Image (cartoon, rainbow, N blue to C red; front, side, top):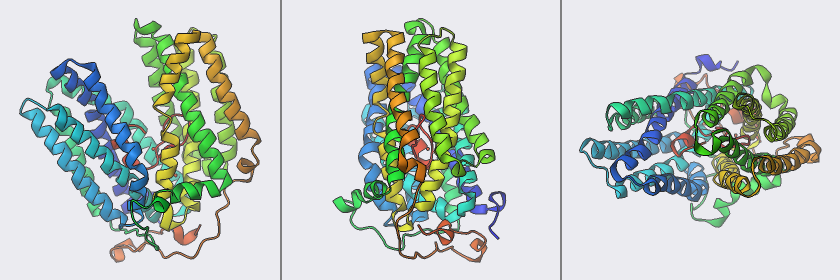
Length: 451
């Protein structure tokens, strides 16, 4: 009989590790641009930090997946934790001494992005070894609920600490990384690919995850339409709503309320998911989510109330989170163990690559067409995506894993791990945001799937 999640020691440690790491990173992510603005007065330099981090994540995401299929995953996570801890320590010491050079800030941001590109697929693979398939949906939902809660609380706490003293949010981030490192070190389960991946720089290895996703019509369609297309369109939708309901920048209350509702919707979806069994109703959830976004875009074209707009966006995000949890649970189960790192990285890459362009498109449409027509164009794009998700035969059939050779179970460290059932023992053949948030390995970003 499989151990319940509440009694699963290693899952609890992974949950707490992510809690400490994401809370610390949320505080640091808010404080870092504030620090640059305070020291240089340049919004361009403050924005450069985020751009560098995003570029580093996208460049290293696929190689990180190869690494996760080459090296024992818990060990790889520990190495990444230590590297992240050293980077945060250097930044905290510089701020404490009264000056953080721009070169150091960019170096720390890049190092954190690269390390987390490796950490995320390794954590994804270890989660598969720690949690049995029938509990994967609930486990993913709990991890997403944790992250959504921290997203609401972290920036507020980080801003308050920064007001007291510049160094406090970075010191809190250091403490969070230290506690996260300890939690990962205490995990007993091991997870190694039965067939190790080849060279990290090999083209075949870098594209192995993409090739696997392309071979399965269901995964291919959902990631391209729901993950890539919907992420892009929803990013444009929320940015347009932010601009419109902020009255062109004259007031931040309306736009801020809409964005807060989006975060609240993500939290509500993560809390509801275990009750809805999303992995069993994934097609219905995907279709309903897509059409709810279409209805929301149409309504926003005629609404003038930030309250109603925020509630509609919250519903979309809630449904999206539930659907993403179901899809990611399915992705975990159907992926062969020896490719789980590369497949996770490839799925994240596909659903993340267009995210930076959504707000840009929304801003361009708003400038060229005005609010009503901008929402109309975004709604048309969403409608096309919704129609594909509704009518595509591959989505109706669901995920059918390709034939795979039998794989060995993950090796636990000792007898105390015997109660933990690796996922691939039962089934041989799924998370946002800033670089540090990627370590949860299965977060939803926007309405589509992002891990």
